[in-house]
Length: 420
Ligand code: LLP
Image 1 (cartoon, rainbow, N blue to C red):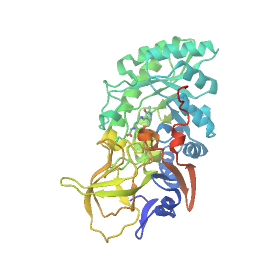
Image 2: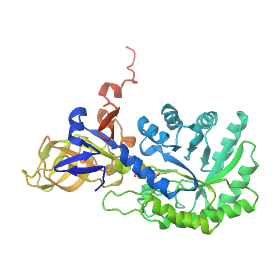
Image 3: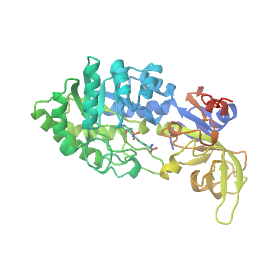
Image 4: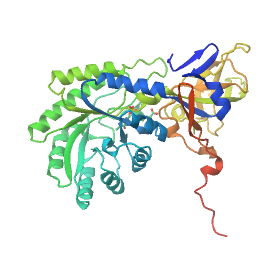
């Protein structure tokens, strides 16, 4: 178990608060996050980089709630953003634009202008076409855009195909063979200032090997690029470190970085400026989603446990057949355990949160869907006109509502009827 989300007696606690008490106060579905768990996850990276020049840029797509962004900004983090909207969030949360890196294959001219105006740290450019447009935009503003080229190192991160990004068939990054030519083009463009190199090979990676392989390929490239007279100031290794959802055993962030930095040292790159872009590993296991059992529906082939959270709240099972642990807020044994598919109210057969789970539950009981801090709320939708869940951040015995529950009216506030 996780020290910050664990049973005390029969009751599930998050830090010093019984989760049931929060559900009672705020209703369900409800996302609850532990600030101590986020702190601890960040500390593992900080330990790994002790004594090095590093900027940790939280990949805020994992969970962009303003208070979460503010939490990481206060710890000195920068942010990996993928849209102008995320930049607005960073600024609204008091983050520093000077610590922002901008990733993504489809940046618009307007987003480029916005980021140049704000003075971000670096554009992680994903194609030669994007490079040309970025230079044009920067020149039109009388500026130079700080640029890193995202290299596709063509290594297999051995994760789900939808979240694997560093293989040749992916839309991401510039092919290894095209990288040097792309840097030479970048160095010749008036609106571009080369500052770094980056790669990101995928997400939910549970082994060190793909990182070490990617590092070798990136270091080879740096040698070639610098030999061509183009200095590379920083090395950005992206994010991707996995978390334990279902007995997964990813390396700890500090162990992984000890291995990677040993490689950097051995190859003479140990004193470079490093950037990293972790998302899931900073917040994933800091959060849970509380849901109430509405109905039990026994069947000939399957028993269904119908709960009030659904694929619109927590799309990972529906999208990736992802596993999230599901546990009761209060362990009691009056009813016998049965095997259920845990499903939501949305009108789709794909609307499930867990399959074939043994649960001892009655209608009215509450369950926690675990490891729900990353890519759950951030991928939620209003499908079936379901308002988004509320979010609460816990610190010790203090809880703060960081997003009140969305009403149906909130969800269609910006819509317009036709004139009569
Ligand atoms: N940097 C870049 C360029 C990325 O594309 C991503 C994630 C990250 C950093 C952060 O990766 P992380 O440390 O969180 O693995 N929705 C999927 C995950 C998509 C990841 C997209 N890119 C899921 O729920 O599993």
